[in-house]
Length: 336
Image (cartoon, rainbow, N blue to C red; front, side):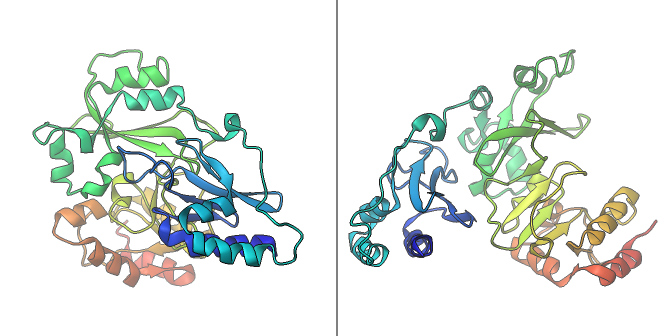
């Protein structure tokens, strides 16, 4: 009963908590109300409320602040706290909010070697307007609120070798790339994708330095309690609501199938994509099969062609299928 009351009041408190997300039944994430979280990034959220035994606690992984849920409520809304205390402790068994011995060594996030390597790069929102690399976000029409998720790397091979020693033994032909970092559900940096600015091949180089993780982009931002869009590439995911991206064909998404909509590139002559679409249907995921009248390869290209994100999401909604109907649509759509 106490956990039910705690969850009730966390939800009541949520309008006062920027970037609030419910990550699981008893884990909530938001920007820390004590330190304000990151001053450089408006998207980082490192405050957490979690359950330990039968009580709920708050911890910030940025400033290290730790307190009981009751004290967090009291800090943000004293009037709500009085209501919470009356309801939470009305049986008289406990007269004050529970105490907990916070041990920052386990909960306080310190910068890892990989975090420090990422800090060596410059985020696109920090580049001067006239910087040549800025042409990438201008040309691709990437929304400004996502510029802080992209980094400029002047020497991609050299920088990668700092993280994964000898990944590129030969530095000849080293060149700049856009670096797109991947973070897990707890905000831990575990992989990155280097996207070419020009005609360098391969166009995308995805490197994972934590082999226990799947190559899935956007896990730190997605709300798993809402429908999730899943695209092929990270850039495409930035134009959709609540989206992640699979940077590896074999990645496994541990989300209820009915909650997920898989969105592949619009390439009806690509046999590999068609095979992957059929596998997705077999696994009972929802699938987008683009209308034949649409002759644009991917979501970012659709934006560049003049479509809004809202229009694209409408097209997705109107062309989402599952089961036998999805297979029929694939057979009608494919050109191989």
